[in-house]
Structures are given as structure tokens and as C-alpha cells.
Length: 584
Image (cartoon, rainbow, N blue to C red; front, side, top):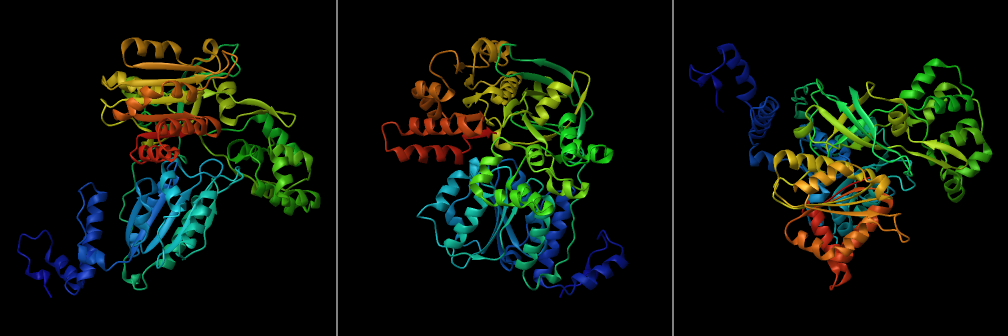
């Protein structure tokens, strides 16, 4: 047992401090000293002094925990990172692994798996996690006998297949022989509080029984203040103009925001979140429907805090319970009739067709939080400085006999003009960035406002003088009315910043022509670009365009081969980070 009192006179501690340290460290075991070494390394890392590795012997004494995540927007990834910190302080040898970088064989010896899984769209896995997901569901997936697991599922209850991917992963782990250590939890858009509670309880349940000797100290220093979901930046609108003709079927606007003084930084491919407000007319209609018009405090709350548009199955069931409406209960419990009623309808339809007076607290308990709206940034800070540009399509349509409006898009186009402001923050999207090698070719595929991030890409390549080939395949309805950023794109084509441009104007000829048709026509060139190391990007509509493009790419990659080869080659591109999607 060594004594710190034998330290040389040059030791950076006063004698009384050495004596105090000696009482703790002098009698400490090897494992305790290793833990302390890691703790001090954490302090240094938090202060920017680098990291010191914890000795392997100490790591070997800790139970393994694999924190596996599947993410589309970054929420699961952020939870996984925080969970790793908490798990390490509870005595685990914790490892974080993105499904996009994982193989199913890595699950066999994981010890314990804590999976944080997002569902994308209507029941699909996140795009980058899709190859792993298919392998997990396949017949060659390994046995998980002896492996414990717990699943946290994230989703959006406005979709019928709420948390479907997380549910199926949980069931598959069990079917492969794994032991469920905690019941699966399914969380909606307001997931933060529920996730924190469940993760704390699950880690406590799984923690080593002797972990009580671990000192629970959070050595992370608070980050410098930055705009976020809870503290957005008020950005002035410095420019706003229409991009589409008055004869176009829909209106799309270009918006420029001043970020000076915000400290906000972004890369092309990132998103800017707008904190929206509900339309005043919609708020008034909802308040009248529940007999609460005239309540000023509730009016403010419904304007800025609650989603009063989306209608979910859970809301129908909860509304039936709190009102005692047996007719609504029968409708809500019949999946087929419920789905038929919900199609094209919103909260106001439910309230008007099943009218009941409600107390404010009971009504707001039905509602989901008003979520930020995310828009691909259509600029490069290298070119525009402390600005961010957005491409916003005004959403207006009719369904179930009522005119409908998009929350954020109509707020911007109808109620915010130049000189006004928007509350914003940046959401990084690192899996949709340009290649690090600016000599590598890129293929940009998109329709409608899906051109927005590509404007940022091309501005970036103009600013950096990138030499790699760039090919844009862009689709919209009419060449004359909907060719967004036409002059800029044609200038980039003339200057060589853009190497090739192919357009798909779907309504300019008798047979509709979409971006997937262009890809098929240009399949030889596309295969050549892929062979030369090109990265493919896809941005725009998830429900139709993305599926059709995927099918076309698989068809192109499998031409002259077995059809299954197309999926294998496309999965290989996804895994290599050479097929990136930002779809919505």
C-alpha cells in the first residue's frame, strides 16, 4: 500500500491536502483507483484537456452494456449518448452503436442491449438503419440466448403504425432467445420526460449490485448558451419573395433570416427549426367548440404551446373517456371505422362532431405539444455569412369538406413579412452532409422544396472551389411555373459548379414524368458515377417519391443480375454513407 506522503516536495499539493488524499487513495483497491483515474480523465475531457484511458483490467470487471440506436432526426442518437454517460457512472462498460454501423453478429456477445429505436414515417425504420433492420428480421439472424435487452421506442402518434419499428425490434429480440429485462416503452413527440424516467429506472434495474460504491458525480460542465428548442433565437426576416409563378398549383417562398449575434452555425444539409404558432382563426374555432372562448390564458396557450390540428387514435379514445360519450367510444374502439373517420380530419372535426363542454385542464390534457417545424437550410454560411435561407411551400388544401392550412408554412407566408421575425434554432443533420473529399462526385435527387439543401450544397462548392462532378436531378410540376431557383441553377451550370442538370416536369406532357424516370433513362451514367465513388442524395416527399426512387435504384443496380442484388448493392451504399436521404 503506497503512501502519498512520500511524494517529492515538488508535488502540487499542500501537506494537509496530501494527508487528506492519502486517507482515500492510500487504502484504495486497484478497481477503485482505476475508477478514480477515469473520473479524473472525465474532468480533463470536460475542460478540454484530452482523455486518459481507463485501464483495461478495470474495464474487464464491469458488466457490458450495448446502447444500440436507430435514428432519423437525431433524437435517439442524443438519448444514446446521454445514456452512455449515466451507465458509466453506474458501473457499466457501456458502448454506443448506431444501427447504421452495426452488424447483427455484434449482438451475440453484447451482454445487455439497451435499444433506443425511432420509427420513421408510417412504420418504417430510419433509412440508415434499414440494412441492419432487414438483417435482424432475416432468417440468418443470430441467437440471442443469454443476452438481456430492453427497448425504448420513439414515434409520432399521428401515424397509424406508431412506434412500429421499436415494437418489432423488441419482439424480434425475444424471438431470437433474448431475455426482456424491462418492458418496452413507446413515446410520442414529447418524449423527453418519459425517456428520462424510463432510462433511469432501467439502468438502476440492470446496474451491478455492488455499484453502490460508485460515486454519482456529473463532471460535465454546462455548455455555453446556444439557441435550442427551449431557448430559440429571434431571427429577423431580411428578405422574402415568391419562387413560383402566380399560375403555379402551389406557392413556394424564399426566406432569408439574419443570425448575427446568435452564435448559430450550420453545415449545408442541416435543418433550421421554426417554433410555430397556431393560426388565430383555428384557435378561436377550437375554443368555441369546447365552450372556452373568451379564456385569454388558454388562447395564449393554444396559440403557442399545443398542437390543435393533429388528430390521433389515442385522442379519440381519451376524449370518449373524459366525456362519457358512448357513441364516440364505439367509433374509437373500431379500428376500421376510426381510421376512416380520421382520414383527412383534424382535432376541430372531432370536437364539432362530438360536441362537449370541457374544463381547460381536461382539454389541454388531450393535446400534444406544438412541435417545431424543420426546414432544410438552403444556403452555405461560407457564402452568406450570418444568414440562413429557407425554401417554404405554403400548405393549403381541402379535406372532409373543410379548408386546411399548414401551421408553420402559412404562419410564414401569411403572417410574417420582411422586417418581422421567427424563433429558430439549428438541428444538425450530419448524415446528410457533403463528402469530406470535395473532389468526389455527388448526385442530388429531389423534387419540389427538396431542392433546398442542394442550393446550400452548390453555394458551398462555389465558395470552396470544389472540383468533383455534381449532378442535379430535379422534379416539379411545370417548367415555366415551378423551376425553383432557376436563374441560380442555370448560372451554376454555366460556370461549372454544377456539372449536369436533368429536369422532370411531371405535368408538361400527357404522361407524368418524375425523377425516377430520369434516373432510369440515365442509368448507365448513374452506374458510372457510383463506380467513380459518387455519393447519392435524396430529398423530398417520403411517401411516394422516396419509395419510387429506391425501387428504381434497385432496378438499375440489379440490371442484368439477380433482382436481389439491387437491394444488396443499395444497402452497401447506405452502409458506406454513399446514399443519404432527407425525406419528409
